Length: 262
Image 1 (tube, rainbow, N blue to C red):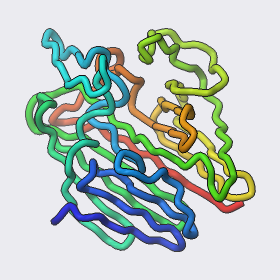
Image 2: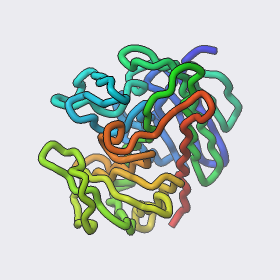
Image 3: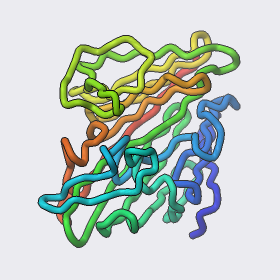
Image 4: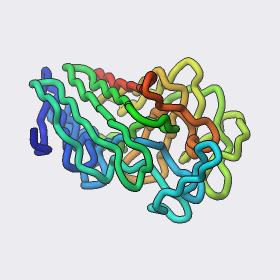
């Protein structure tokens, strides 16, 4: 199938999926109100095969050191799939299935599958990384840009993490866990019972970002948008907390955004 834009609908919710632009969600409208920041680099993109920054673009796989392009010097950031065209495998009125085959500069063969499913009050994203050849470390995550204001109303962010990854001057976790600090944030938080973050636009909308995963980066240093990024490990996790993809065990993750009118 082609990689043309896809529109999913359910109730008064409508999502635009852009396979040709990194497999991202280009827009999510609820009752005609757009929840995601618009623009070619925004919406919500999948972070795969790693999340956030890799220090100096280098990670170790056993005794082998791999190097990724420094697309956020001096680091490599957010994986390779957001810069690629994905293929559309299947589409219905309220669900799309996309695939992306890992290729250069990523050194290992593998396939990523993303399922985007819309209901009248939720959007669920699921992703898996599979290989039929050599095993390799990987991460999965999503990077949504939620509009900071809806109809002139500013967002409030509420969450109760167990810890915050201490951030060094290079924006990467130092390896120390500290008590959660007040914002503004560009920080990774640990939630051992699963990601659970509530965004509230008073008198407009409440949106909950949940995931069985235990890490989320929260970013609110921009005027236009805030980000809540569930992921399978912290930034630089290919070095500090790698998850292994093997021919017998794919890496899988999900997140759900559920909303209600206020």
